[in-house]
Image (cartoon, rainbow, N blue to C red; front, top):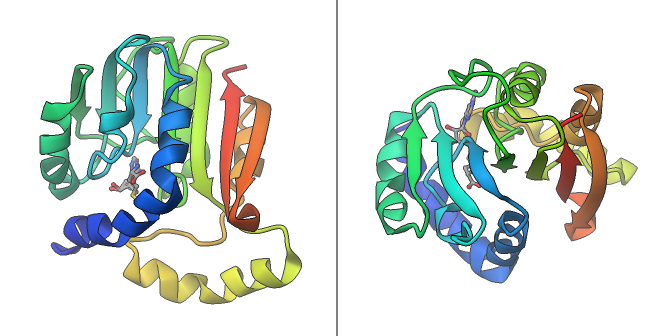
Length: 198
Ligand SMILES: C[S@@+](CC[C@H](N)C(=O)[O-])C[C@H]1O[C@@H](n2cnc3c(N)ncnc32)[C@H](O)[C@@H]1O
């Protein structure tokens, strides 16, 4: 990862967060309980939104050291205990059926092997555990989808491997999660996907 990326990420996200994303994250995280796994916690943008009443503990995984360092202040200020583990979603160090809930935001676009990561999420979460996603995806509208396909090679180069046109909802279904709710934002560019494991 380029040295400037974690700082630039927070800077670029700041207006989007204020506009809408903060609200989406807050609502999403309200659905979590018990011991929570966060996938790809990045600069810790979600950390302020964990509800202290229902969430006991968060294990956040993030492979990039610079992202982890940047998230440290948010981790310290969080209302719930958060432990950050430097690891990738495709190879989680946790035992089977460890977690009561899982959350992933704006991360399955970047994970090199998303199916392997989803299978790991299934393995480490308890049967019936809520698994919640907020992701940008390939849009259903044909012209917009084609535009994303066209822009993707350039986009990937400047966004640390983020894929603009990934069909994350299809991957989630293929991995065997039960999808309970899909809420589109910005004409389907972003989806909140609420599932359970199994
Ligand atoms: C676009 S950022 C999103 C960060 C944060 N979740 C958010 O909502 O702002 C994507 C994050 O995924 C992380 N990432 C990349 N590959 C990963 C992998 N294989 N497993 C877990 N996280 C990964 C990156 O290091 C980066 O922090």
